Image (tube, rainbow, N blue to C red; front, side, top):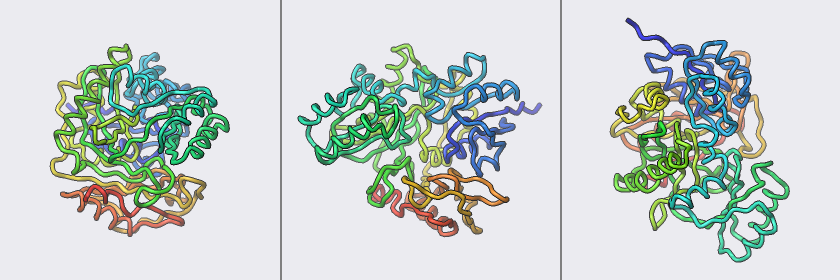
Length: 428
């Protein structure tokens, strides 16, 4: 007897992460029809893109009931912060992702820093402010450089590292007074600057048990050598040659396990993907911030390295049966994902430029994940800042990186830019 095929709805920002998750889900023998809200030109090859915003809870609820969707995955920060998972659960629907209260680890930096303090988790020295004058006064006695963060969601751009007192005051003014991040800046976190390599850690959790991913590393800055403004992330590698088993065990023991235990003890069990962004300081790993979903572009390398059926893992998370599942990652394989972005990104950029992908641009060890793309007159055109993620796998990290850059030579669009040093520092 053949297994029943599931109708699945993937709710997210329509980027490379959503395409990568859909690509992996589609490989499951139990996956039936796939729907994306929002999607892009890549997800359109896998299923149906809905004309519904990922934040429109009433419309998505209505669609899910009407279409008899078997499983909804909420995979980006905004719908999680709005409590989409709670609303789906209330309606008796099968949904994967953390509740609004659990996702607060991401959508309120003030909440997460307070959580770290209460549960004695390793992080930077910090203070939280809602008053501009008090925050300004605090800056006067702190050492430089110093980090200023908008507490709410700001598309990965709400963190400013100030080198001078003047820069710090200007940053505060932009966030708290001029409100460049809107209401996200009503509360700010000011914290000490930490040095060391930054890494991304992910873990599946069903609220009671968890399973770790290999470590990955995102590249946040637009310019080579980690220069220029922050982006949503423009290149990833995994696993990391400089993170050994000992470091991973320490991260699990000192950060992942106590975070999930702390959430459960506080009456907000965390189900879904816990993604702490860490910094490896001379005093050991410390938490920079928490995310409550897959990273983007981290998802693009993880989906290339995951051997197990993603649908089985998600079902086990929803059913609270994760502990009985053995998750298998590809052995001795490395992945690299380089993001091609529109000219001008992360500032103003053009949309609607035709994308040319020549023969050899994809296939085999290369998978191209779409982000800011759409289909116009049967052709791919640019439709966002981050346009494509070119992912490659290899037997060494060097090989994976080389393959990704070789594939990029076959891709072009007006104003295309990308970093040429993704993963380079990890090879040293």
